[in-house]
Length: 254
Image (cartoon, rainbow, N blue to C red; front, side, top):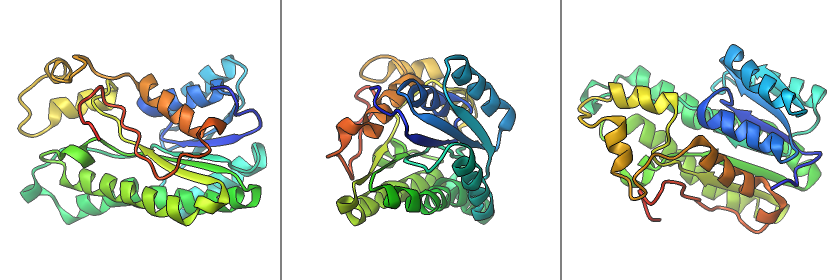
């Protein structure tokens, strides 16, 4: 895809892993990129790589769970790049803990980042999209929503809520040329996934063993997710909304 010239894309959590690959891909597609991330140093490295390829990019420090922080990032994005046309809600926290050991604070923080965060970001950028009569909202969810995952009830609940929010907003804004879709990654090799695999309670298989257990016999790459996002952000996906695009090497067939 290469039809995003003149479009401003916000990628939350764009500093590493899947977010990094998405930021790089949308820049390659011609978009101008605003990375909203609370890890500014890592986000600046992604931005530098994009700038090396002559991409237009800025980094905004942002906590997606804070409406004030999101509003500040939006003001800077609009001032330096322009109105937002594409939003990729990728920022998330994860972690494994047995349900009986899960504190209310941990539950609340997971919901705040993984579900409330996308809500706040969508609310922030939606006026730009409505004014333009065009927009793309792409939520990165999780294959665990469709398969379950022991020790991750808070994460699965938050990502399940985001999947449902995707469908609700797709119907609400279908007549406005704003599409809303979600991409649930399967087993993708990222630093976060490797850390989670090593620390997950009760997990007895290594990352390599889990990768080999997928139908394709390997883990996915961040670029695999970025390719799906690239399509959904493109003009070619104008008639695609409310959809779940599974990218998981056959791990779940939906």
